[in-house]
Image (cartoon, rainbow, N blue to C red; front, side, top):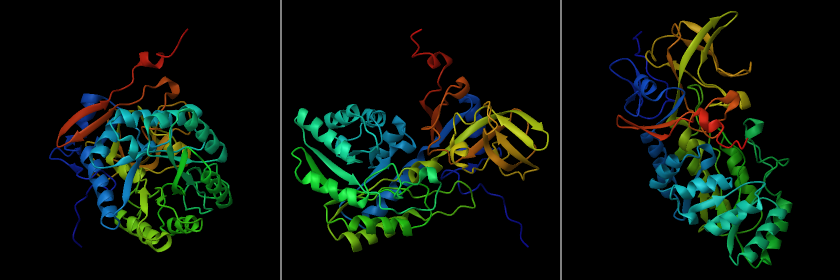
Length: 424
């Protein structure tokens, strides 16, 4: 049998490699040098990966359908530099709050290519969207429809809207990120959607553009997406259909999500069959664009061996909450020996005062010790956006790397900023 040369797991950003020094390299930058220069924890983004995935998605849609828009589901990584980078690659975006809308506008996105989501938008957020001139507001309830109509009348403006339909279709994913089932806080049931459609026929200030559907996140099967399109097709014919997002990504080498091309083909072919020709189709990828672009770097503070081996690092649930929220699985390597076979099964633990603050359970590492730099890949989606100050920990920086050049796009939070809002 011929021996094979170890290689990095395919979940790392495109272009990642082990360099001549035997170190993990991201965007052409040595991970050990990045940790030394910028400190840890740190979110390291391979800019080339981010751009390549955006182009892949746009090209897949454009090759099969003429009237479309690809909107970055920005709740996955609401960072000004990420908004700007994806806009440069031809994407619009969707936002789920006034804060995300502020960031998108600050990054220079065209308001006409911004969609505002949310199941409980405030009057202030709706007014902010009206004044900005966003392309669509996705209506989530009759209460919101009536509130928006009154606000538009007061501001003497007109607004194009979509109705979010909850199709009673549930993909196989964690219940916390499943949104298409009948008993959901999001959207209108088909019967309620018909009522909203009728209500909008008499609205002076709101124009019904079409329907929106999104059944959840981190989905690996294509059939639920097809079923969701079938559900909205039964509500009538409209010029615009927002087909949402939800395509899963590989967090570990054992996971195999559909390829972007296969997902897009399934969505567009089903739309052509069930919705008819000449429709404007909107797509909202989020995780599929940004997740694999980013690796979080940590420094090991201590290794403790009792019943298990506990490798404790300088971050944890303040910079990656997903393992604690969803039981999300990750991989990890030691950055200066990423291909070395593991010698010990370990639990990669965070520094927070919670027993559940474990980033990766049962990971094999080669002789881990204090001072080692640990890399956990696939942290571009919902790492930064869920970051918090638990235990008074400042939030990490975001470092963009491209062609061997690294730059800070979000600096590390300071202790002083933890008290910046205090009045006493």
